[in-house]
Image (cartoon, rainbow, N blue to C red; front, side):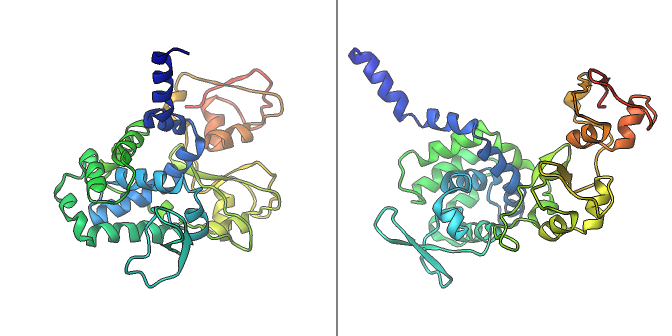
Length: 305
């Protein structure tokens, strides 16, 4: 390898853009955004901190919710124990065995992050910036000493641009459905289901042993309502891997399916197809001019909107 190629190779390895580009294709990043974007928007309206900045910091500091601090302490922003009287955890960081704050859940971490910035003297100048000036915020955080990493601001900006997090800085309202259900603690010793957003709705994937009642208790919704949203009986047994919708389903699939039919595959039913796209079963029949007693066949092309 000649000197020029060696320099290029080293440059690519050290480039934060390359590192962040890889993160773009990591499903955990998008899952984290889907789970916490509404909390970040809520915090923006309450504390005047750009939602994009809050999300980018959460992603970067917590490794998309998978860091030791996030998992063991619900600490998504790496906030240390300065002037903190709550529970603590110790971890090596800039120095050995440093003290970090411990929270009961992720929402507390997001709220404390906002309070930490809004009441800290060193961050006061940031609040004179426009809520849409995420670049100014990112550079201001670095200049104020939030992190010691010399490319911290660049990393925040890259994350915001890669995932288009700036779109949340102009959001007029947030979805209370998600913010009311932000939890990190298992229920009955079981890990929590990941809530995913699709077709203006929310769903979880059923696990072995799940029932409408157990999902309802975890999410905080009447199990009878969840069964009704999924067009099922409240006592039905759930199969592992099933999609379970948490709100009333839409009448049509997303816009991208306007000219894209669904071709029936082996083992599918009208109900399973309706569940896949978050469509009401009755609407799926009506869109295709079919009666409820029609038996679909492999290869049938079904309209989705």
